[in-house]
Length: 152
Image 1 (cartoon, rainbow, N blue to C red):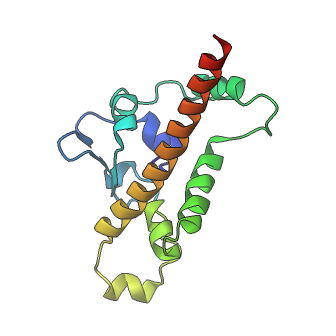
Image 2 (tube, rainbow, N blue to C red):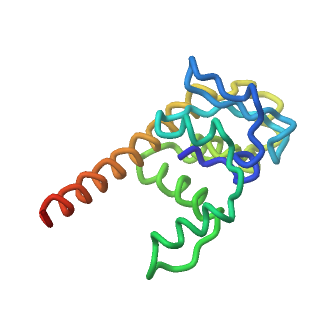
């Protein structure tokens, strides 16, 4: 739901989550490109990220069991889904790239002259994505409950 790298989630550190603001600050020293980023945390993520992603391979196995019959996947597919989803939701491509903490699309000249950090635009884009995913999960859960109820 955040579009972060698996290593960033797996190595989450005490103090990176601000529960009052509902945000997660990945500091520059833990970001692949050395550029820190602040991401919003949907309530569904609070308890998950608060304890870190202790064993990504175990999580992957659990997801694999749920996705029987689907193509094999890797963690990076989730980042790709976030990026594609942001475009589908109408987020500007520059903001969508920044939401994934990609800076390769920014020219050297822009890095010198444009000092805007885009933090509010990034947060708005990720909130839009998280709301979209939460709506899908809620619909899925309602459908599952309806199936269980119909069996009784």
